[in-house]
Image 1 (tube, rainbow, N blue to C red):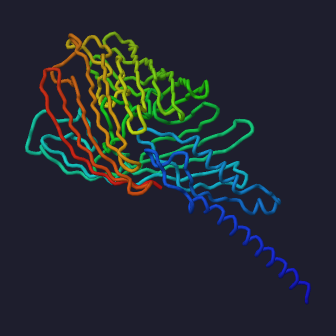
Image 2: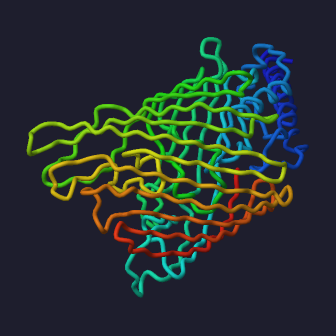
Image 3: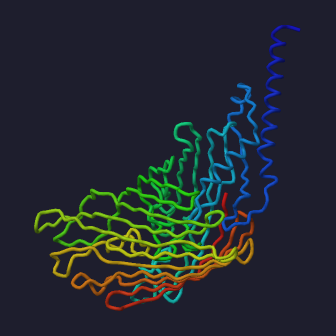
Length: 460
């Protein structure tokens, strides 16, 4: 046989061997998905989390003669995503598919969900595709008594990468987006939610504000959630520390401020110069530390320009919060938070963007931060592994300040809900929800709204 044909046959045999090895690895990677058991936690994924893990860079492993145990690699990759997964308000499930190098030095996941929500408002509306008591019209007209909405803009995509390094330990990069960019009904512009790098307790980038206790709010179909909660995003540098086997946890951050005040001819808006400083300390208990109580605070320094005096004015804002969740029994869980402060509209859901961080007095010559507070309490009852129902009540109030409060300004918002969810599969759930809201102004003029929500959501 000619020498050229011998070389070609050897190459063909080598390719066949590599192909068989890749096929065997793929079968091993698919094994967890084929044998995964049903999940039994609220998000459908607990200790039994078993994604499909695809191993990449196979050629590198074969060429180097690496004898890395593939099953161990898949288990390590799964453990990385299990231990770095966050639960709580608006958080997606763990990813279904992971891609990992043979030694699990690098891994990547793509996940998210598709959500379709249908809503019907009656006997008054919230002039928003979310149920926001602040946006309830106070004057009834033929056009704001009822409305029908359908919305898929809360559907989500996320990317998560993990690198296991010798210098920084486990490094996490995370990016997620939904389609709420414009804020307008029937508009689906992409919106960046989170984009951060995390390692050794540090977080750099954009994430949910450190003042927010992610697991202190119940699950709602309504995207906004209880009006006294504080789910907002901020660009930040944060440090968190876990102590005593995760019983104790604390964190502090410097976050880009978001100021929403009211100005007049004597006061002008200024660029901000000092970050917000939120911090917290938390105590958790239970086998998986799934019950906790948290105390939080935030300090703010807001700037305005006094045109009359031709000088800059610094306004000090501050807030404190007590929050938590308690698993009373395997079938009953409680959620709550209470917040009080001055000039903290970004940290109270109903007041975000309201212009109530500070107000000028009625003469228009002085300006000061406004006192505000809110609280919410809710409970969830697990009827079975696939079904749960929950309900709760929330209220927000801006205190009256003599000389600084105007008759047509927001005074109080109320929010009540009840819902039920059923998991058709571990990754597909349907739900129904009833909402009641009310707004009252400083002059005691008030109005109500009612809404019914239906939703189907599929995680991948």
